Amino acid sequence: MTISGAIFDLDGTLIDSMGIYDEVGGACLEWLGLNENSELKKLFFTKTTIELSHVFREKYGINKTESEIVDGINDVLFDFYANKIKKKEGILEFLELLKSKNVKMALLTASDRKVVFPCLKRNGLLEYFYEFVFCSEYNTSKHEGDIFLFTMNLLGSRKEETIVFEDALYAIRSARKIGLKTCGIEDEWCSKDKNKIVEYSDFYGKNWAEIKGIFDGFRWET
Image (cartoon, rainbow, N blue to C red; front, side, top):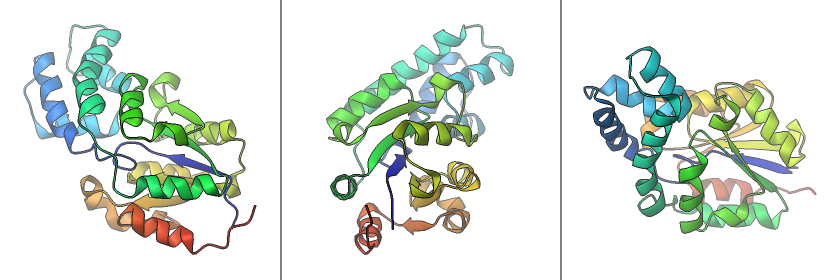
């Protein structure tokens, strides 16, 4: 098997962060003067901060600029990412495996640059990644396959040699649709989509130790 490029999601994939979005969503809604409800809080799981700002301005009439809303959300997020969120167990060992096989790795995330780098550095993940792509900086999301192709091109890998590691169904679908290999990682916040995630994933594991076991068994070609 030949893999020359790997694209990793951050939240729910490399780090155990999805659980904080319920708390973060509540804090942000309070700051915006909106009543807390489950449907609004769900938006924080799948949308970039720029997309959230559009929703709050256009649908809920929040009288703040886009940048004010984005900065406000990131201020709430920063403490969690910089000081509290931990890496998923077993991820370092898996990244070491890919590194030993000379696989170039990229991070593709809906989270913003401001909160991502402190979290990666504190958790010892930063050094493994060759490229960093932030959806909000390209005014797109992982609902669109183009951002995966863009990231792949930064790595210099070909479709048939590129694999995407994700926990979210919508992102796995997007990557699979454009011809990339996919590996799903189980996360409790995506449990309702598990059957579909398994269906759209070339590989799937409950945790990184299990995924490493799968990849350890490959006959690697360089």
